[in-house]
Image 1 (cartoon, rainbow, N blue to C red):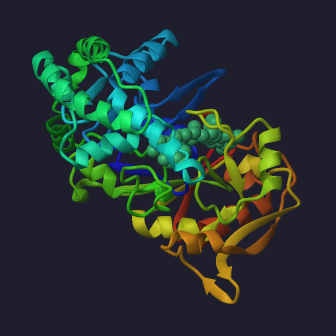
Image 2 (tube, protein in one colour):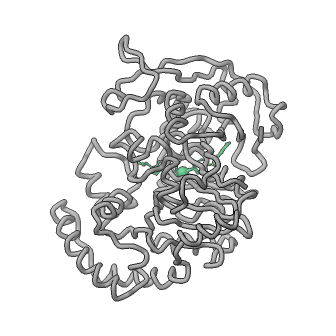
Image 3 (cartoon, rainbow, N blue to C red):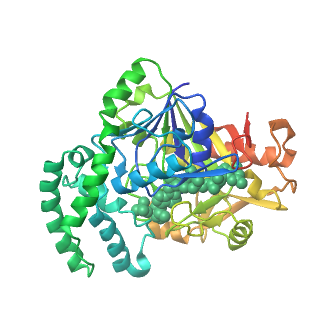
Amino acid sequence: MANTILVGAQWGDEGKGKIIDVLTEQADIVVRTQGGNNAGHTVFIGPKKYVLHLIPSGILRKKKICVIGNGVVVDPVGLVDEIKGVLKLGVAVSPKNLLLSETAHVVMPYHRELDGAREMAKGKNKIGTTKRGIGPTYGDKAARVGLRIIDLIHPERFEAKLKERITENNAVLKALGAKPLSFEKVLREYRAAGDFLRPYVTNTVVYLHHAVREDRGILFEGAQGTFLDIDHGTYPFVTSSNTTAGGACTGSGVPPHRMDRVVGVMKAYTTRVGEGPLPTENAEIADMLHAMGREFGATTGRARRCGWFDAVATRHASMVNGIDQLAVTNLDGLDSLDVIRVCIGYKIGRTRYDYIPNEIETLAQCEPVYAEFPGWRTPTDKVREWRKLPLNARSYLKAIAELTDAELAIASIGPARDQTIFL
Ligand code: GDP
Ligand code: IMO
Ligand code: MG
């Protein structure tokens, strides 16, 4: 398989986990390159549901190697729990099929506490983070005071660095009105996690370099989505990493000219969890999807905000990621509608926008301009061939792909592996 970068083309939760699982069949290696356990990637295999946060979704297929790359921020206690949880579900996970980068940064308990305390202090201006400590960990990385996995697995070095960092962070926590952390307790917990993870740790950049030379197919599993990107998203309502295609290179050490294609995953409608503008947000769509038991967050359980498909956004995503091929998921979510709307522009008064304005206040004022498509009002979840999809469903998919400016390659009509149509 060609080396493939898979990204979310909206605000996260596009169904990346499902599509990764499907594409892993043809890959040798699956790599996470950014984000942390703020991600929640759902994969169904038969009746069994798996939600992966840090482990690449490729772990569910035999004989595939999974890599947690240097760009990821790793909560070691969370990762140990996740490995144990996945093992309990009968999936083989060991240092033979899961590799952890030496240079990935470590999410510390003070990062989680700071995340929560800062959100609290922001009050109604909060970002709505997952409170997993993601922002403070990337903050420390950029400020060059972070701890890395290579520190975690060297007990003496870890202890010295922890002592220094916890003192400084406890002062900040105190100033924010939060409880300081116990050095001994953190040391104990993190030592145990470090001991457990040590056999998984390796130089993943060198490993991937050899894999590229041997022509093994690599799949880069994006987390979050384009509009949560720290540079290209709806700042400040974003996460703290580069969720767009470039993040796959910096977060793995595999150079850009070794990448062969970019696959963008998007839902047939829009969802967002957390705060920030969402121009096509619509209460009726949200009620409909929630009543079907859908669109509850895989990590925090929060109800996702829902709206019509926003082609202004996905076209922008296509531009900043260089999306070659599209996977459209959750088409079946629209099966019961008479009329389906697609946002093809924004307006504020008489001013039209055919791009996402950079000023968040302006975006918040944008009203969507809609085109309407006739619904198909037929269940699609049992369809397995493109030509057997209702004509209106095919027209809708073709239209949103064309508006997004990319080629439609996959349509997904249910969470299961076989509920996937290849074009
Ligand atoms: P991710 O974060 O991008 O991996 O997406 P999540 O797993 O957080 O959320 C996507 C949800 O949609 C999950 O519950 C998936 O099982 C589900 N899903 C994915 N594709 C489809 C689809 O085509 N139809 C339906 N009904 N559910 C889907
Ligand atoms: P996957 O990989 C959807 C959102 C949070 C919040 C913002 C910042 O499953 O698509 P953070 O904890 O990262 O500092 O929160 O980003 N967010 C996600 N939304 N899917 C995700 O991951 C997300 N990861 C973070 O809700 O709005
Ligand atoms: Mg998710």
